[in-house]
Image (tube, rainbow, N blue to C red; front, side, top):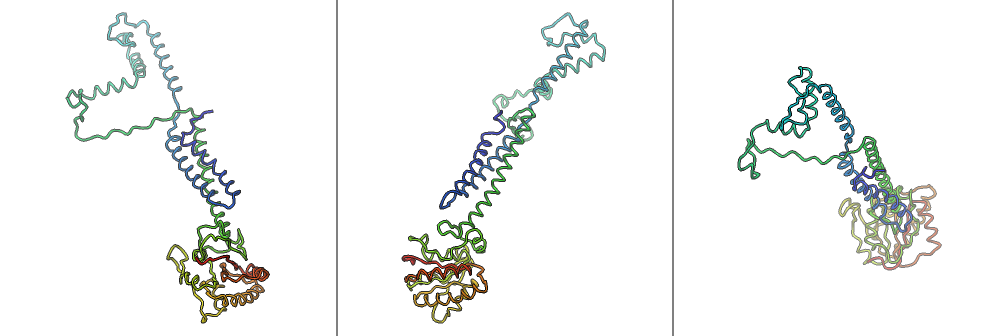
Length: 385
């Protein structure tokens, strides 16, 4: 087996794409998931770059090795020359001079025109290329004996002539080996392209699958909630761990960038005051969403309907108002469940009002939120910082 079908760069590309499936398997088994599938995609892209370099700079330079054919032609010429010498042995000149070449022992003066033409052809074919080029250079003009030419100066001429580009030495192979190298090169590129397409699909599916997992979600994007819930349903009741992954202002900004709406219920006016009047849907200031701080002029029914259609989000800074609002929400959600109504985008009811909620009440409320596409989030500890 030959090992020169690829260059070192080509074999490195093969080693890299072999690692890609291993990274996928490790990513599927590891919990919590991190960045192995993204690393696998980056490795596949690097393998493709190296494979293209190998294809252009090495495989494309492979040429057929015609040394055997050239040797066969040269052997035929030698045989023809020997046959001519034997046929015209009577015309051999008996006098040899020091300046005669090895093939000048035939007496050309005694040959007819047809014999002369044949011998000229045989002799011309036997002259090496370097000798022909030397004669051409000698016939082209007189030798430049100037001082500039002797010391390596610029030659005389009308203009500056650029040096011809030096071609890389070709890689010589037999026809069967060249065909094998071409097939392996094409197969290597096809495999890497397939791995790149699969890797992009894995990254997309992994992103959607992790979007509803609190510990693993990353890069919130305003995508339809159905895409997230189709792979990983959002928990209708979630108790956030201590310490939390993000502060409350960061958490609300995260939910807004997901395209979701929320009502944040807290007992602390100071915590409510840290929530801005608007949050961006994308980037830092792109597509701002109003965050309404609830006062006595705003009814609970208005808050529920606004949340249902995802028009705005709300902040409540009173425990009494929060308890009253939850009671009304429970009755309204029960009505929506009977009609099988469901929100288009997830609504988060965040309870951070200090007083603990009854366990049985939480379970009953979670059934309503699950049926209508909402989520009850119960915070533990101080989340306002």
